[in-house]
Amino acid sequence: MIDPRIEMMKARTSRIENIVLFVSGKGGVGKSLLSSAVSYILSERGYETVYLDLDFHGPSGQNLFHLDKLMEGGKSGLKTALSGKVKVASIGYMVKDNPLPLSGVDRMEVLLDFFSILDFGELDFLIVDLPPGMGEETIFLQRMFREKLSAVVVTLNSQMSLTTVKRVVNYLKVQKIGIIGAVVNMSNLFGKYEPEQVSRELGIEVIGSITYHPEVEQYKTIKDKLEKTPRFMFEIERLVEKMLGKLSRRLT
Amino acid sequence: MHEWSIAEGIVDVLLEMFKDKKLREVDIKIGELRDLDLDVLRSALNILSESRSLKGLKFNLHVSKARFKCLNCGEEWGLEKALEMVEETIGAESVIIEESGSELPLHFIPSLIIGLQKCPSCGMMDIAIDSGRELEITRVVVEDDRS
Ligand SMILES: Nc1ncnc2c1ncn2[C@@H]1O[C@H](COP(=O)(O)OP(=O)(O)O)[C@@H](O)[C@H]1O
Ligand SMILES: [Mg+2]
Ligand SMILES: [Zn+2]
Image (tube, rainbow over all chains, first blue to last red; front, side, top):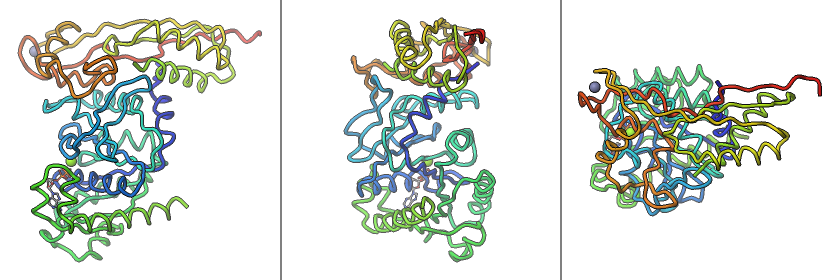
């Protein structure tokens, strides 16, 4: 049995420069918030960016982005949705609020189909919002696109979050996936270690520190969250700058 | 519809895997959940293979019927029942729009149908797709090397 989707996928992703994974050990640490914020800022700065929501159990793309244009099927496959300048793809648009109890095989099938029909076009960044841990999504991505992958590790500065995320970091290292660095989220709420200690604990550089901003929760879309919370915006801008610096060093 | 991109994937993978072989026949299995237009797919395959050094290659397309199975009670059902349930869960209108109108293009990612139905007998959501989502090259016949 030969699966033609692998070649379709290669063709579709051939013009993507960087695939950046937002990973964590646990849920609720801010992967979706930060990956969508980073996608927004990158797009604002003129980088062609897709925010891809691969959290099949708790897709957030449909909530964080107000869509000007829906995902649409056409001759060249499935076009990403548009929210301002950000391109967005999420299965949340298809299954809405219905639960999606997928087995491992089903999940791989969804990934193969999604990547072989999504019309990415030419991209500077494919930002991937992942479920926590090292499930099928992560395994699939590293199997298919290892050379293009790099990861941003999101963690809280708490013992529990750091211990679990460390396993993910080890996995990324073993699989030779470039790690851009760690982002410590809600840094004012948890303060187990100093930044240098976090860095030593995880064995990777801390490239960003994001404060918990209660105002962020008042706004629905990532655009509003950022634009109406200037301090949050500032922190994300700084994170993006760090990421860009790291990536250009890695790429040259 | 995206028959052309699928045809391209098929031709690409054949060229990749059988670089210097002459191919005579290829069997392709397509699940009915993919809702592909076989005539379009066949002519796309013919045109692409002619233009890309696979001249004279014959494509046999087989459609496999959709079968769902409840892993809780063993109930089995097919496409018609499944589509009824999808309509009930998600309604006729949908967020994703086909060029032709507003139809849920589930056929792009058929496995998502799992989240849009419940077992018609016991009402549980422990559903397996036995068949109907295939997109596979199941057989390739290589010409003898006599040329
Ligand atoms: N720095 C922050 N300031 C305010 N709210 C935050 C912050 N980080 C995360 N949150 C909120 O916490 C919740 C969980 O974050 P989320 O991004 O969904 O986590 P994950 O994707 O890792 O599961 C969301 O409601 C999110 O808006
Ligand atoms: Mg999330
Ligand atoms: Zn049942």
